[in-house]
Length: 126
Image (cartoon, rainbow, N blue to C red):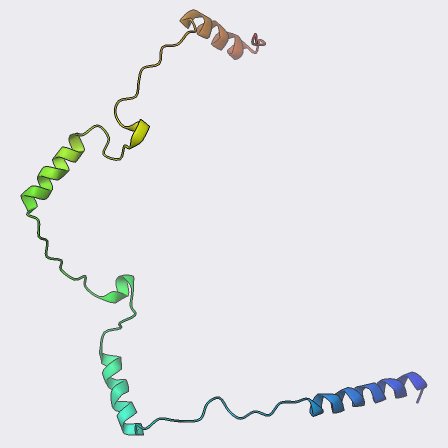
């Protein structure tokens, strides 16, 4: 056996001994502290399996609950019609109301000439 093989075998043996010396003991997950019998747990499991899922969401949650409103249907309809006929029901601040008309200072003929020049590939005057 060469010296390198002997040295590597000794190193592996030392690592194995060091690993065993530092290994932790396993005492299980948790000790059993239930006072219920196996039959009681089985009966509770059957009840839970046949009851509704309290954590279900969306389509799995079953039929939707019926809400009872304190406002009449005609009052809601009147409010909806008023909101639909208003200028902008989502407007607030500067955007509420009609947008002001901005008058341009550029002549219409000048804009047309620039558009035609751009369509022909001519350089635009800056």
